[in-house]
Image (cartoon, rainbow, N blue to C red; front, side, top):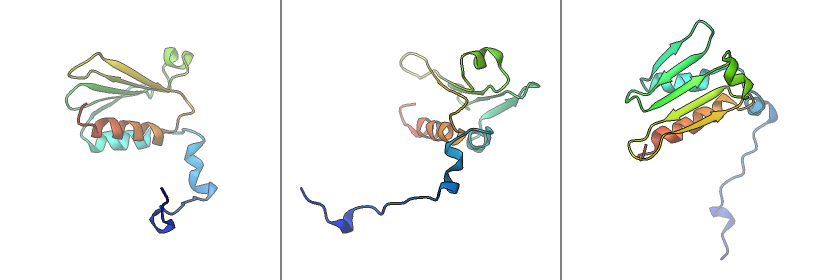
Length: 115
């Protein structure tokens, strides 16, 4: 099968300075902005960890930059899901995972009708 060049999407190549977020994670802002905008309960702890729970209580998101056990396991983000059907599961992300990637993961999870 051949495809006309006019039907192919344009190649987008952002400048390197537009991709600085891809190399490090400096804050929880993108995730907390997403969850706060969706009405999730967000609680800060005195140690600067942040815990968020979905309105239905089935999804927990933890930003754990000052949690010693999490750091020992190389974890900064923890997401726990209790589906209506099936077994609960956990997804964790390390300190070098950009918050934008975690926000994208959560946006896809939240948008899924099977959640």
